[in-house]
Every structure is written in structure tokens, then in C-alpha cells.
Image (tube, rainbow, N blue to C red; front, side):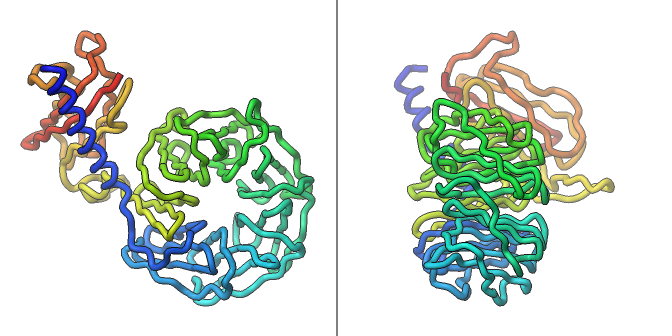
Length: 419
């Protein structure tokens, strides 16, 4: 193959890859052009978003149709959270703190009284009674669903942007100037935790814990910080961008997303590796997932993007006698990441027990590697190709074909190795 043909193939192939990536994140029709600051879903259909000028958006069908509803305020709403389908809070900033509460699935919202004059940025409840709101140097707490809010001692005057509690005792707050605050007694006492050097004064936008020990902070300069001891020690992770990260969310211990002012990154291995999943010419401020199959992100100019898991979208699913999700059709899925270096994961679905052969070929049709050649049971499968041939020697950069045969089913797709 000549260099000219290879370069033409790479350009054409990258265009195809971009089209596929955009097929996972789809822009939905938004009824507003106001900036959207926060999004929350109670399930895959019931989703809420808030933003500038008191904008409150709601959908009951996953975002096929969004409607704007009365919020009871015209101020900038910065954060929204529900603890179940009926009970939720949203907060924002005016001349006084705005805290709004619903117990009837958003049909009506009532104002709650803050003990402090500040601009709230984030709200988090662990149940219907215990919650926290943070803002400009201020932390307030309630133990009765917001009927009474009590100010806690934060020990700082800088802007606080995000709060997250793993349970009623253990929580974390992050903000400007490298602020990380940690509590193990519900906020009665807050301990200042240093951001590791050299970026000790980073602007931290978002914090999330997958359990009481494992937490993540989204920060500026394309940096994430990870803790495995409940927030005592944080370790820097450089993702591969210099942009400001605004929001981070995990659906379980291994699958997480983080959004910046124009990009979405995803991890499938608990944050060891983050891959760029989507680009958009708009700043994205909040991301939320309702399980692995459905997620949303929102941002400036009212943009709303919806993620639908490709596996479920292509095959559909059934349940076996043990409650496991099973595909109803056999399919070969796109490898991920793509392009890749040094390895990529190829996923496929089997609707019945089959003898599976999955092989990699070069553009001349020559066999490069046999990844699978064995009987397999119905279900979802994946295999990692590390860019090596059957002799375990590394192969050159270029386009490769992967082909699956499973019973009477066969399919072929392309992938690009870039070294």
C-alpha cells in the first residue's frame, strides 16, 4: 500500500469514527438558549435541568421532549438534586440565597430560608432529611429536609463550588484556590486538605465519591484528583487536555464521565485511563447518568446532549432466569477507543450459544491475529487487541479489519492503530 493511499484511508476512516462517536452522544432539542448549569435524573425517563433566569426544564421521556416549567424564581439556578421521584431541591443566587424544595415531583416548589446571605453553588442530600448547600465561603446543613438550615464553620471565605456526602457523616467540599474540605462528623468540623503540588491553588469545580473511600475531583488544566482513603490524600491525574473540567460523575466503581468547556471524557477502568468520547463547540457544565445506558450533559446556550449505550441501542435486551441482561440479536460493536494506541477493546453480543471466530486482518486481506476461536455462550463479550500479531510482534500503524463469525452471523468493521 502506498503512503498516499494509507493517508487517504486514515482520513476517510477517522471521518467514519467521528460519525460513530457522535452517534452515542446526540443533541436534544432544548426549549431555551439560557445557560444550563445542572442536570439530574431520577430514572432514564424523568430528567431535570436548571440554569439562568430561573430556567427549569423537565422531560418524562428521556429528553425526546423537554418542557420549561415554573421555578418560582428568576434568578440563576446553579444546582438541582432529587433523592427520589417526588423529593428534590434546587439552589441559586440572588440578593439572598435561593433554596427551592418540592415533594410532589416538581408540580410545586416552595422557598426555604437560609441562615446566611451567600450565593449557593451546589446542593447534595443523602436522603430526604439530611442535606448540605455550599457557596461563597459558606456551608449550611439541614437534618429535617430543609425546614431549618444551620450554618456550619467552613474555615474559608473563597468560593465553594461542589459538595458530596457518601453518608450522613462523611463528606467533601471543593472550591477555588485549591480548597478541599473534608468531614467525618456531618460537617460539625471541616478539615482543610491540601491540593498536591505543584498546582496547589487550582480551581476545583466538582467532587464525587463512588463509595466512602474512592473519590474524584474535577479541576482546571485538564487535571483530575483521585483519593482512595476517603479524601485524606489526593493524587493528580492528567487526562490529556488543558481545559477546565466542570463536572464529574460515576455510575459505579469503574465507569465515569467528566465534562469540560468542549469535551467529554470517559473511563471504563476506574479512572486509570480516560478517553475523549465527544467534542462539542459549547461549554458543558454538568453531567449525570441514570445507569450505564443513559446519560445527559448540559451547558451554555441551552445545549442538552443525551448519551445512549450503543450495546442496548443496537441489540435490545432480554433477561434470563437469573435476571442477567441478554442480547436479542447477535451483533459486532465498534471497538473502543478508536483510533487507539496501544490497545483497544472489541465488543460483541451473542443471542445464542455459538462457535465464535474473531480475527484481525490487514488492508491486503492477510490474517494478522486470531483473537477468539472457541464455543461461547449467549451474552455480551469483549476482547482486547494489543496491536500484536499471532507471533506477539507489534504491528505497524494503519487501518485493520476485524471480522466475526458466530453461527450463521458474520460482520466486519475497521479500526485504526496510531503509534
